Image (tube, rainbow, N blue to C red; front, side):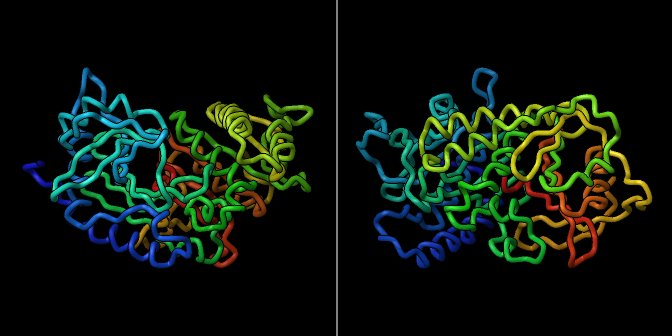
Length: 378
């Protein structure tokens, strides 16, 4: 099917399969409600097909699509092809526009050891394997959490010759912010629909607009954060914009409602868009928007931050101590300084290259900690 193998596929396929087998064994729900796990050869073939498809162009467009390993079905969430489609890069690039939109997947199955696409589907079982083509040579292997409004949990990211497996134990490390725990997807489903979920959605939206951005989350019960801002703030909001907080309070009983989810996405996108303005957007931990385009200044009497601890929640990743300038430009420097001076706040920084860092104070290291989480946001 693919004459030239993608080397990373052979390396990562056994580890991905072990991940799914381990999680299925730990599940307490009926096995038939969980996604099937392909053997290593099938999984390797899917990754190969996705990788070589990502390098093609179809009428000038890069194929962006996701493949779901699920058996053929005639349910209302599926559309069956009359003739099975060979899973070749040429054929997949041709049908990519059909499954480019979020929530639509190319259904893939194996017959007599050969992979084929049987149609499209919107229904993915819990722990169902999905391989997404994000951009050329960038793939994400993920699975659905199982809840209707739940996020997909990233398992591995393959970017060219780099393979990153998400570290499941990262959320248990000291000083791991609740936002990072939610991004990892290993917290409880109930909390996924709570306040940290909003920060997750803001992070995803900030990264998606591609302009770079900075969001500061400050305590609603304190005004000390103003000591770290250049006054006057040109885009201060008075009274504070409470649309997000009110929506969350009003929608407490209906968070699984599609209309609520749509309204939430719209408000989140508005706030995320403000982060693209030069400077920082400022929001309280009760979701009141206070300003955007605000300039950060070192608090009077506070030393300049010189070093930060940096980690990435991937298997084999090690903590590094670097200067803020090694992480990025002015946004990273300002965010690290702000968290150093305002230790009860966190800062979300999106780079123009779509890298994403969450800065928080680490009492264990007595230092600013930068959590590089773009692997979790893909």
